[in-house]
Length: 181
Image (cartoon, rainbow, N blue to C red; front, side, top):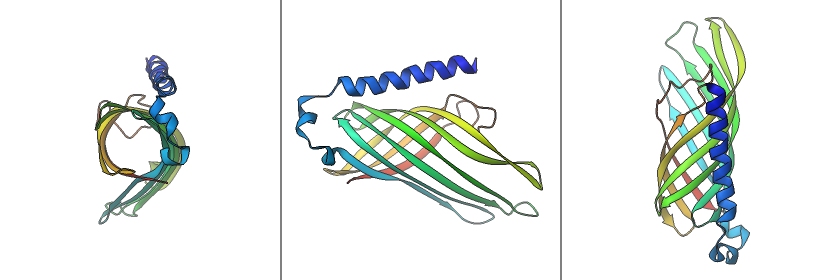
């Protein structure tokens, strides 16, 4: 069943990418490449007994007025002091994404990601595993200026790898930003 989900998700993601290429409009041909590029990402901070620091930069391009695509990296440090001794994790990985504007501010989002994740097998022993993800969802993008925006999105991990920290249909919320390069 997981292979069927994976193939289905990949077909949808590839279709979105092909749609991006096929919808290259006359307007987007007039825009120089440097004006299509953006960078941004998100940062997450939690402090206290459970400390989490996350940084996730992205770089991408507005392929045409309806399609954004890009790639990014992510690093997360976690320290959980609710255990004695405290548990610490270092997670890192990369992702590639595409977004399609359904209407001017609402978008559908598809993403392939892979992370090197630590997990405790006992309170004193950790192991590292590669965990793949396929995220689908959508969001809202608010333009702040002609070349900068803030976005809010909700995604779902549809692959459900055995080491995924997300349960089936558990929403993943994020807030991000982008600025023209």
